[in-house]
Length: 362
Image 1 (cartoon, helix red, strand yellow):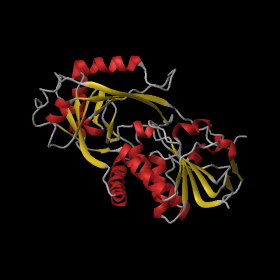
Image 2 (cartoon, rainbow, N blue to C red; image 1 turned 30 degrees about the horizontal axis):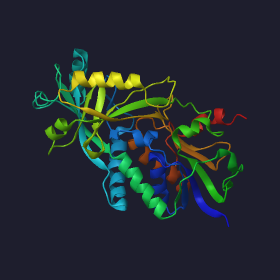
Image 3 (cartoon, one colour; image 1 turned 90 degrees about the vertical axis):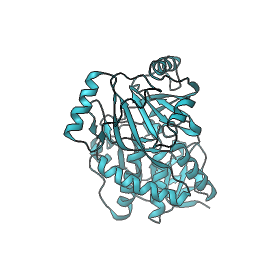
Image 4 (cartoon, one colour; image 1 turned 120 degrees about the horizontal axis):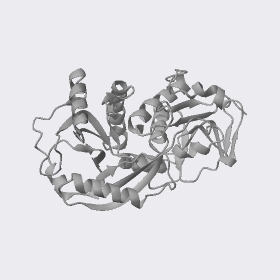
């Protein structure tokens, strides 16, 4: 007998996980299909929600709204899963050049919403080399992405809501109307792709202007730095590269942003370059314990892809979050489900209907 659900979700990364929770909130049934991979883009991410971006330290798109929603949604998730995965942190931004110091101070004068100067610029002198001082970005938030995805996955498996399997697009049958989706023994009203780089080759969404970029990261043990920060609000350190707390007291160091790459895996050139940068920056002994890489589903416009196909309304997508999945995914998962249930509009500059002409081509 076919298994019938309201929504079939492809992918259990940060987008698929929040979408499943929003469907549950709305009383809609779902099933997730996901092949477990140790380092997808979601699982390799540091999990930082940073309200400012770029050399000019401008606030990121929709950040006030996104931050408020993220705090609420991650709080609800903690109640559901019995553990908290969101932590308030700040970024200690060491200035690599005099120009960057001036840019920070200028921006601080214009708008100090998320920026402040330290009380004592010498307090990290025993741990780092930094001749030009630093500024502080706060509040920021750090998401334990690995912990969140693992706990959510365990809950889905226990409740029979997830199948650990590779999705085979050739076995999907989609009609021209809503409620016409079949995949093997599953019948659904809708199918929504949250499969990251998998959508690059999708017969429905490959025409969208994805801009895949690769990120490489070192996982590093720095015992002296961990001890130096004990008992205080946790800190992300930045000086060209970023260093964020990772699991088991380790640090995530990276990440690269490669728009052209020959291999999707880790490279010796990144490891050597990053180790050299760490030796010049960090005064403490460190040890590299892992080296990981993943390809991000970024977009040319730096805006996510959210909504339903103009030609096949039963087929949807929640993807293209780039480096900001931890803040964008909860918000747009809610928008997508509200659109399904209430007919509420999706943010126009995120809605894939902005590509109706391209997606409607044969």
